Image (cartoon, rainbow, N blue to C red; front, side, top):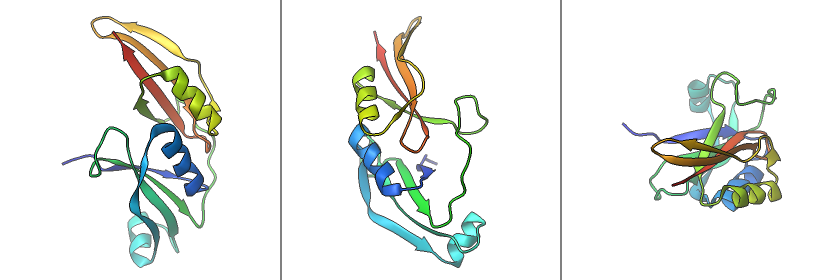
Length: 148
């Protein structure tokens, strides 16, 4: 058994994929997807589903590692903005070399502020430096680094 991917349903998959590629050095794993049909309806429980998008290779993994799947459905349903304490999946996290620089880069590429850069000493491990913010479509991202 192995972990395969996480999906983000995006209003604009190309713009969101560009954000993750620009900020986190993800890469598109061909081919781009353009799916529809009875098989997709059966799997998703939707009727008349059609989606377009791509899988992004995550940093720190090879071409066969887990991916971030970003799809846009022809018919999207708006949801409320999520916060860190909402039930269910709330964020993805990336380990980075420099939290402050990566955060500034994310904001320059359309990321949205949420929290503040925070440092927390964890006995026996080191100091965790981290922050939560939102990508251009409002999905929460945590970036972190450990200092000894």
